[in-house]
Image (cartoon, rainbow, N blue to C red; front, side, top):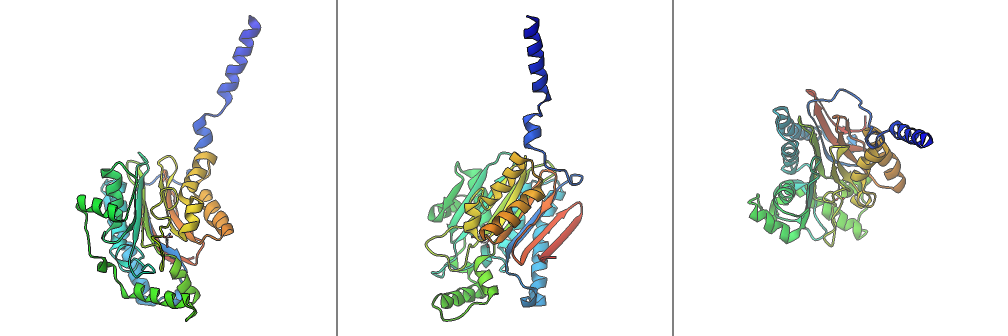
Length: 344
Ligand code: ASP
C-alpha cells in the first residue's frame, strides 16, 4: 500500500514540474512596456528606387501615409476600437490615387479594375473578405460588412456587389477607378507581352506590387488586421491574390499577433504567410521579430517570394519587414511616429 502511495506522490510531483501548456505555447518576448495602443500601415512593397522618385511624389506619399496614420491614431487615442481605426486608415489610402487599392487600383488585362480586400479581428477571430469587385468605392468597408452582417467569410464579384448594395455601402461607376498612370502601366506591359518593348526592372516591379494594409491594437487589447488591393497589373481570368485570403494576406489573433501582407500574392497564398507568422509565435514561442525574420527573410527569399508585411503583437511590438527595395510604411504608438519608404 505504502509503495502505491509513493508511486502516486512521485507521479503527482512529475506532473506539477511540467510547464503548463500556456507556458510552452505562448512565450513571445516582451520587448518593451506595452503601449496604450499601436498602429502600423503599409502602402505596398516593391521595386521603389529613390533615384526614380521625384521630390513632389515622395512628399505626396509621406503626406498620405501620415493622413492614414492620423485617421487611425485619432480613433485609438480617444479609446476607439481597432476595427474602426483599421478601416479609417485603409479608406484614406483607398481614396488616394497613389496606392494600388480603391481609386488607384491597377488595371486587369482586359482594362478593368478588380478589387480585393479582407479584415480579421483578433478577439473573436471573425473575418470578412471580398474578391473581384468592380464598383465598390472602399472594398475594406465591404469586407467589414461581410464579417459583421453576414454568416460568411468571403464573397466575390456580382454577389458581393449585391450584398454591398443591401448594406448601403458607397457604390461607384467602374470608371471611377481610371487613373492615367495605371492605364499607361497596363499599356506598357501589354506591349512588353508582345515583345514590343523591354520593361525596366522598376516597371517589372510595379507590375507585381502595390496594396495597402493596416494593423492596430486598441486600448482594450484587441488586434485587427486589414488589407486592400487592386491585385497585379495585367491579371487575367479573375485572378485573385493573397490580400483577401485569410491566413495568407491577412490574419489576426489576440494571443499572438495581427498581420497584413503585400507582395507577389501567389507565394503568400502558397506559404500561408500571415498565419505562419502567428503560428510560429503560438506553437514555437517565437517573438514577433524572429517569426517575421524567419518568414520574410528566410523562407520567402529561399522560395523567391518578393514582398513584405506589417505586424503588431499583443504587447504592441511592431515589425515591418520586406525583402524588396522598398515598402511604403508607417507606425504610431506612445505619441511617436515614423513614416518610411526605402530601406534604411
Ligand atoms: N499581394 C497583392 C496581390 O498579389 C499585390 C501586392 O501586394 O502588391 O494581389
